[in-house]
Image 1 (cartoon, rainbow, N blue to C red):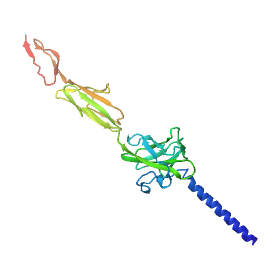
Image 2 (cartoon, one colour):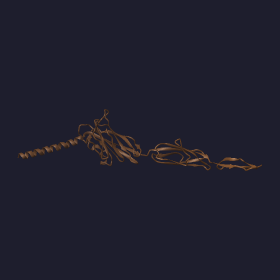
Image 3 (cartoon, rainbow, N blue to C red):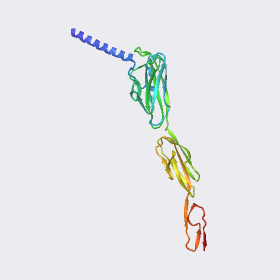
Image 4 (cartoon, helix red, strand yellow):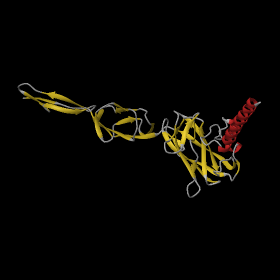
Length: 284
């Protein structure tokens, strides 16, 4: 019988410990963060933390940061929780495209591809809680950041808390630059005028002289690149200018006369392309 009593007491203690652990786990309300509750329709039907935390004042939640970014660029965003209980805050952020990045010193971590709190953050004197994180853009397309912010009262339970969600649409667009091209008289540059070029792209130009003329010089960003007939800007990452000048093409005629007469004009005469040159020949 004594042995039976010992067994019964041991079982009772085990059940008591398990019950305490279960209650404590519920009361803490995911202090180490949670994913799948950012409000993203692709996860848990777009739910956020009100499925676990309720009864408190709903906070205002905002996501701020660049809404038009270059492909592959990394940009910083801020989720801010205002109002609510003004004691503690937590978050869950997801993205439809691109890669989320947790930043050190923010009390966050990356979990299942989402940014969530590693520990709840205390509100500032104005009752706001802010978390910074980064997001790396994909090669193209538009992405949406979904963010849920939890405002907790800090009593260790889930009642008396509340949450709200928000989203931010981001357009991924290539950065672009302009190249301004011009040509002087007696020739052309193609394409002429202002051309918009995406960052990292190439842009070629053709320089063509009119009949009887030739390219005299080409200036790129004010510096001569010589009398070239074509030029290509490679891997454009800044604005540029290109301009060309043209000159008439010339030829020489060398004239001479033997004894007992003259030729006029004598010697070397320079003649423009397409022009005429007359000579007089006079005997003594």
